Amino acid sequence: MADEPVSPIPVAPAGLSRRAQRFIETDGIRVRRRDIRRHREAWIAQGVPATEVERAVAFQDRWGGLALPPAPFYEGGPRVLDADCPKETPARGWSHPAGDCRVSMAYRFMIGPDGTFGIDAYRWTPLHASVGGWVESLALAAHARRWATTVTRVTRQAVDALDLGAFEPVPEVQGVTDSWWRGKDSLIAVYRGEAVGLDAPQCLEAHVYGGLDPWALRGG
Picture 1 (cartoon, rainbow, N blue to C red):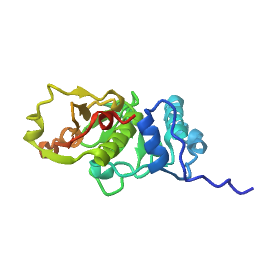
Picture 2 (cartoon, helix red, strand yellow):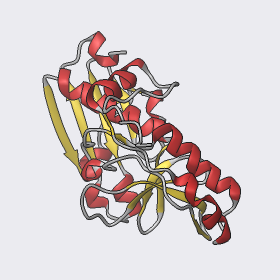
Picture 3 (cartoon, helix red, strand yellow):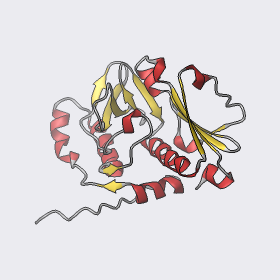
Picture 4 (cartoon, rainbow, N blue to C red):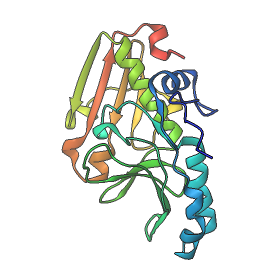
């Protein structure tokens, strides 16, 4: 029997903000999810613990096959969220891929042993505490671009000079190395991942979205 056709309209996983749910369901596309369960026995035979295989399978069940618009940094992020065979490194433990890059990059997108979403470059650099946090950050960036009257790109040392004293962190993005900040009329995204992971301070960057009214500051 032929496989059932896959609807290109995704359904957002539970536990996300309304803003992220709308973003997934209006701007995302669902492609056919790879069945990684069929590799289970082969991966275990190669020495991958069964618990790590199941963790990759759980990721695939929740996020696999979800294609989202490009991120404003990291050359757009993963093309499609997609797990693969877990790998072990002495310093980090077990992790698995989160999806292929859109362009040739000096790092890979990975899910760490504690569920963090990050980049594996010269060193492992977690960006968000979960892939849900990464998706929330994409949704917030799309929302901020839509409603801001000004967008300012800040780079290098000027990022650390930003005065965030009157700002509060945006909790839903679950920032680790990267972060979002909410002020009285602006949102600021700070991207430190490449600067840290590649030991390249010139890659430090922030985006300041200004002119936001009280609704646009939150937007669900």
